[in-house]
Amino acid sequence: MWRDRFNDSRNWMTNVFTRIYRDDEALVTPDDSGTGIVSMLLLRHYSMVYRDTIMPAGYIYGAATARGVQGKGHMSHLIGEALREACRRGDTIVALQPASRRLYGFYDRFGFATTFYIREERYTARHRFTHDGAQYIIEKTGHDPAELAAAYRRLTSAREATFLHTEDDFKTIMIDSELDNGCIVTARSVESGDIVSMASASASSDTISVREIASTDDDAEAAVLDALSELYPDRMTVVEAYPGGNSPVSIFSRGMARIVNVKALLETDAAITPSLRQNIRVTDPIIPQNNAIFIIADGKVTVTDYDDKDVKVNLDVDIPVLTAIALSPSRTGEIFSLPTARPFMSMMLS
Image 1 (spheres, rainbow, N blue to C red):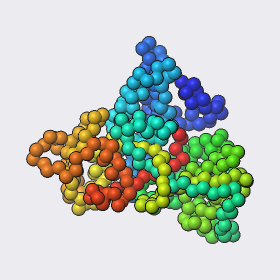
Image 2: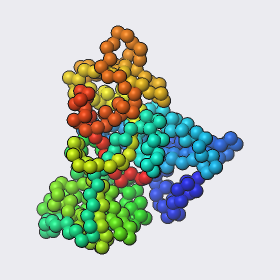
Image 3: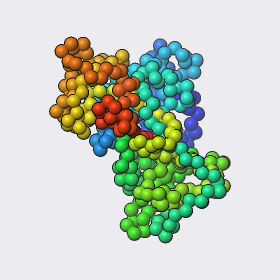
Image 4: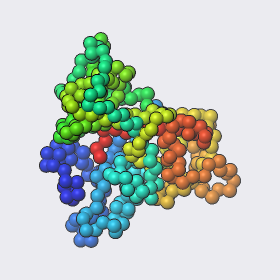
């Protein structure tokens, strides 16, 4: 079914699919005979930084329904199962990147909110990225995945919330990039020897698409962009950049998220802000244990019945609204007296 629905090359199936596929992350709906499947998805494990706290997260990838049986509710059933499974295995949120604009509306029905954004920067083929070239050693091949993972975490540490990539993730990213006519370029400081800038990009006949860029400063960022323009000459450069916590410039949607364990998320908030006091009632039609009143006080969260009349509720929300609040810039959180963080994800298989 994967080959039929996604038309990935044999090279990709051999070199990437075998790296990312795990039985314990695969959810399927069997057909009536029990010998085949009518829908499938991968619920991949990730870690996500949320205001300096590491939380477990799921990522839905490769969701598809067999030809001829679409529109019969198979994927709707499977998405619900995936969300409940994510909660059971300990994830706090689940994220995904819809394959098309119309699918944002489909995932809305399951409590997902659009929370991941990019700031798009466009440069013509004639643009020159000026920088102090004497400061850097540019590396376009031969990267050590472990060093890339460590450098990525260091270079993105100032972000409010972001998906992390392990050494094994970077091995996969490097293979996937190469098969997609792309690469990872790094700039290493001549003085310290550390990686001070990195970019992951792919190229078409007329465009360099930079899917992630992380740098210590603007000069180091210009160094890797200049290296990409030399590697792929006479092409415009499109950078999908981190939008920043309260970025005032135009941003574009990249993906969606959904809270699957409300108590775990609010416990993180309570630990971040011990003075926080809120009584939040949540409605969740898919995950039963999220239907409750969550009492935040003294750095802890207690749970009481959804209809507890003895508790004065300060905030009464459903799951997509709570997700949109929790995963928003800090200035939005101030309105609701909650610590919040705008998340970012990049270099995810999509």
